[in-house]
Length: 300
Image: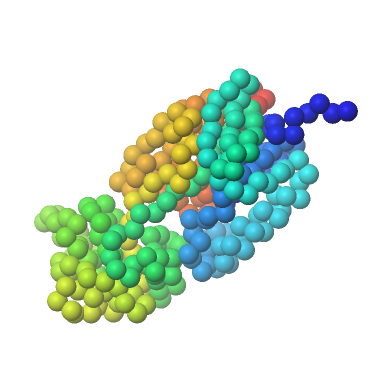
């Protein structure tokens, strides 16, 4: 009779979106006993199509994730657990992960692909259009605007990056919306890129991406870009003592080039461990984390 603990794994991957699936695939192919825990909430769930990922350009993101899961679960050494991981702690010989329903699992190594939450600007009508006509990534959504009318809704000085990039994708209006005051050098840079600066406050969004200003004037756009404030979608990294780094967009898990966190035997990948990302970067990040976790099992 086998004495193997059915709740004990070589590794647990927390997060079953693009980075987590990619990390798990490397470990599965290394024939490690593996559990993937997934809450089922992808960051790009509002988008109708994913772009910029070689071989998957233009496909619905939910189909990419579903196909990845199907391919992963073809490996008999992989198990899948739906639900949210509520807590994680170090224990003798590895780690323990507890689910919201009280179930518990143990592993020698952890890969955190837990993702982030996007805090959106408090503008009426913006949240309903997020991922459909309001975006954050020009590489993901800019081309489909067909060099049309593009807005940038500022959230602070870091929005200059959006405003200076997007003229390659269309005619840009930069809505300052009281978030900061561009200095003379910034105004000159915007002017050189052909960006129109709008200083009146934004009241709401309507139609596809029409901006209604405080004086009732309407600026009709084909799409609007803005930056979000990122927060961790899961408390596990902080519970384990992983150090975080801070960017203008929020915090993310600190990792080295091999995706090792500051806690031994804990790796992190995807949007939770990057200053910025998209599906292609998340998949690459996950592949590195999964391979690095396997190498750690071999060589420490």
